[in-house]
Image (spheres, rainbow over the protein chains, first blue to last red):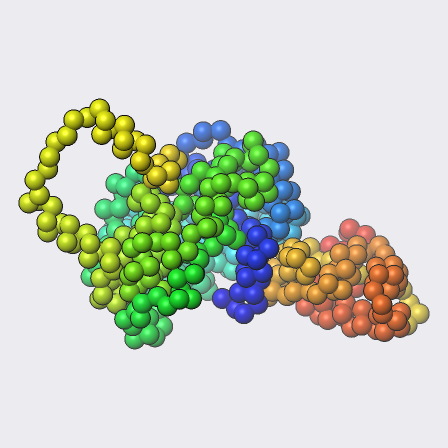
Length: 384
Length: 106
């Protein structure tokens, strides 16, 4: 992050301005990726007029970076009308697409409309592997053709490579492919739960040995020694740190107008069909609660040696049951990176050693069930 | 300078007010710029129809304690700098939509 961008982010934080928003236009998609965290149905998407009104509201609220994503954004027939309107309101627009529906005509319009970046996922350089992940025959060839077209128009293209068990050996060849196409590249070794809380797709995550290999690859992380250095533990400054931009300078809006702190943080915070965007941003109790949390408020993480350097995702922690708790996937990443287990991993290991031998006492149901329901913290109720 | 100069914001930019300053990103090379309060005043008034000297007199000199000659000289340098980065379009004629698009295509 450049100094200027960091300064602007700090200023937005101070002024409580939602600098960045991801807006999903649809969850419908022409691919069926095995690791996708969305369903692919239309449960009542916002209309063109509703989206234009939302764009007006977001521009007035100070949103600058607008990521338009899905689902596949071009499944909406009004996609270019929406994009044109977003650029008229002078958003800095990034598109996330699989590129399948991009031909010369579409590339011409994307270029003419001044889109900042187009991100396209490439899972493997091998068609059989990529197409098996997207479940769409010929999809690798079509996505690569879209990248070539967009690059030929001088557009910035980012190739995103999600690493999972099916393509664990392919991230370096995909990086080479991106370089050949003149595209930027980033690798993401995290499969996240579905937005409805279903965790079954987590079994696609790579194992610790594969993660370790990613984190020790100089081409990906730069200075390996520095990147994988043992953590020093959080100091006083770190304890007052904010977890990430979710809910602080960024949020996510679903195709149905639901507002969440982030696409990976499905804490329902309001709906723009009922409440003005800026009122949700300023007054939503859920967003205010997210903003109130610092590392100091996280019992396990504040005592963890990784506390100050961990990539802990509050949304993944929320999906695990407690937005003030650890995100085990990030604990595993910290361990793979440094070889040092987090407090959470140590506690889990201790529990796994002792729990099979514990005597479980079965109690009467009536009072216990009532007490449990009353005691469940609000942030454990995953309702999305 | 006796000739009127007209300034218009390019459409190949992203822009938003943040507090009392303007963030502008060039869509051609993703370079980010910020304008201070006075720069923001001129930027927002750059509608392609109002001459720069009128913008300076009406929006700058009437509200800020700056001598007109100094303000005009600074404004000329300011718009020239932004034009060099493709953020503003400058012409000796008022901008019409077609003319503006044509200038951008170049």
